[in-house]
Image 1 (cartoon, one colour):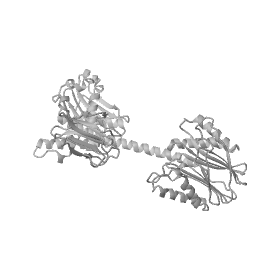
Image 2 (tube, rainbow, N blue to C red; image 1 turned 45 degrees about the vertical axis):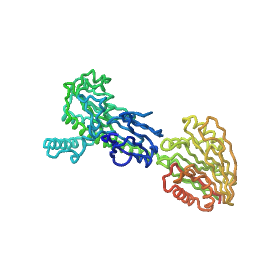
Image 3 (cartoon, rainbow, N blue to C red; image 1 turned 180 degrees about the vertical axis):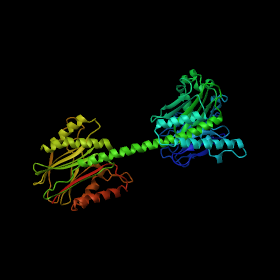
Image 4 (cartoon, helix red, strand yellow; image 1 turned 30 degrees about the vertical axis):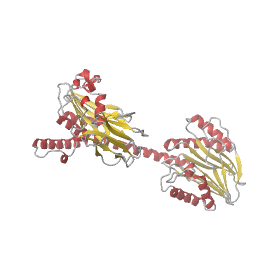
Length: 551
């Protein structure tokens, strides 16, 4: 393989580096014994190979799980590559370069050297220590002028402003220093589409004439700056009607580079003459694009920070409202000890619990529910579930009829993927009899005073899952010293470093060991136990626990 070829490698983490293609085949992958190992955990061990065949250079995917792309297109078989092409594998990017040709120059069969010049934008941005200035007074003067201009542009764009104002200032700088007939700034959207965000022209209709998908592909996908001496003679722009019919002759374009990300591109054009722009103009355009990209990035970061702050305020308000929906204080029942608490995995929770007295204090209703999903959507459904359940609870309905009424209303008001599991128990305070319905929830654990454990399993489907799902009711009696624990799956689905979950059996054993401990101390001990089990990892789901014990 020709020794002049190399790969400019940008790994997912760490600084970019060059890899010389000085052999006939290079295997690339995650394994340490391949020719070009990359520290990218999403790569296959032997992901792809670059090889020579009949004088051509090709790249081939080796059946990897996540595939290989060339210039953004996934390859299905051996694909020919040329200097300037971008090979992407998961989070790794490799650009093929020829050290003896201008970096990014297109292959001879695709190139009209007298018409168009492509060069890597990075070449224009090298610091002075990496360019040859010694003994060249003219080059030194140009470099000093470039630094002075950079300082001016930085100062002009340094003020805090919104996107439209920033783009107008960028256009001001372009027209002041390069004096084009027309200029357009294209920004990449979240879906990858390139959209014109700002433009200006000194000729009628000129601002609509600079878009070409061929130009976008060359500049943004390959991160090259383009100097088009005569667009009418370059076959790449034959399909760009806006350029061909307008009479645009000379173009210069530069990517808006933010590290390895491309935010968009800037294009200037002229219909006056061929070769209206020089390589020095292109260098200046690339420099201005780099400054503009930095300011755009800072603006986006500021906007994202403002959005995060607003979201944090909304979440804090939602958390305040949701907290107010939880019981302020638990009933004080003679001969009974009660505890209730929840720990959200995020600011707001998808869990809820209720501990209510009814029938003039003769009954105590215990309810724990866990809605599907997490975050704000789950918290809204939780609030709705609380509102839907309160009326049938206070009306004195038995547990199974409460679940049926709530389930039907929830089904009518929510999409199919929204539902809630729930455990609802109605305790006769004097006798200790508990009539319960388990709507697809984790089994409540009843730890008897003798140390035995009973699991109160599901007696129906989750609430809101089906339009008319039947629910049954079961009865169990709590004697002196018996402890009932109702919880959500955030407890049992806590995982350790080996992805093993805490599980119902561990929870039952924990409750057996603490069966006589005060309930608030049991809650604290369980939180510590779960934290130790997960080795300090943040909870993946909301954790809610309600306990009641007969004294």
